[in-house]
Length: 472
Image (cartoon, rainbow, N blue to C red):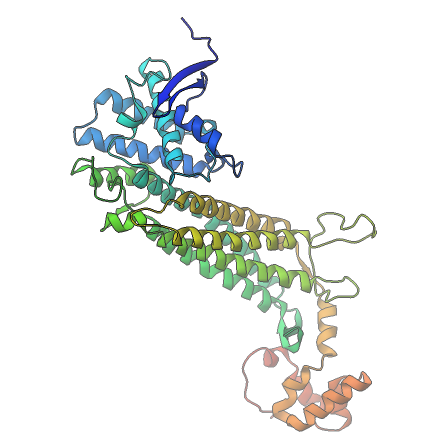
């Protein structure tokens, strides 16, 4: 007969509690929901983490079957439930807030209970009939939160890093294409917000591309460090309650399931408490955020105006910019990316503090690390995709305006310095500033250089690369 009750009764250390009959999670998950209502962001917000948890549980089941401590029927039910989760089912049942006490125990139990209850259905039993398939005794066999949870977190960050690498790659390519497109746009370079020496807009955009491209390799290197795991170490890294052959088997199966080469830590006691790889990865995210924010600062400056600013480039108009000023269009995409970068930089500090807060054989603050790493990675991925498609690809250059600024810049004195001397160029720059005359006109008036000599010096081929002071 079909169970029509709204709740089922489950029992744990603290006593009995009602769990919604339709829920695949159980009593420990429900207690965690009641206790931790902090971010409003459940585990299911990050599918990579849900899938990684299922992969760890599947690998554990396969290893336990292999070493002879888990029966075939239990193994089959656990594996089938995990396969469904990896396929995208039941994610809504992962309901615990990402920030939680207990070093991730609530997340681990959420996974154990969902897998157990779905496995019970597969075996033909009702949810909650744990005598037939138990969240702890079977799904969590040979595991502790302290090795299963960090292993899943590391794997989820590896998964999340690939969309970020793809987003950086797309942005780098878009900036590189703009670099080629703007290769013939001569403009003024600036240092300390003052005119410096000529360059091309193409050089400026290629520099943007290059600085971000460096971090693709850094992310790949960090992923290799994250692939070193303490699975099989159980509670504190000693491997208590696990078969001697379990760790190697579980890591081998996890590598096959995840299609990521995972490696057992050489010292699982150290690996259980050390958060160094997370700190390093977070630092790379911070580095990307800093670079990205600086680029967006430059885009906002270069597009400032349109009449009273630099006005060297035009950003795509995405929306009206003011409720009071007609015709105003703001650089909303770079502004949003700046704010994303600030949040990522702040998240990095939280990761650093949480990593430092570990005590003795465990770091209980790992849920905060998890929340911030996955959040930062997703935010950066989304922000860069937005910047690429809704800003960079549509940027145009105001070539004539850029050329006009170069022609009237006092910075041309720097270019002429090796040919007419520092004293002369300083004097001419001061006169030009006072009178509004151009440096070029003053040089010709005083006969310091001929028109043909100036034409040669002002040739972009000469201005934009190293050269020897020679006029002949």
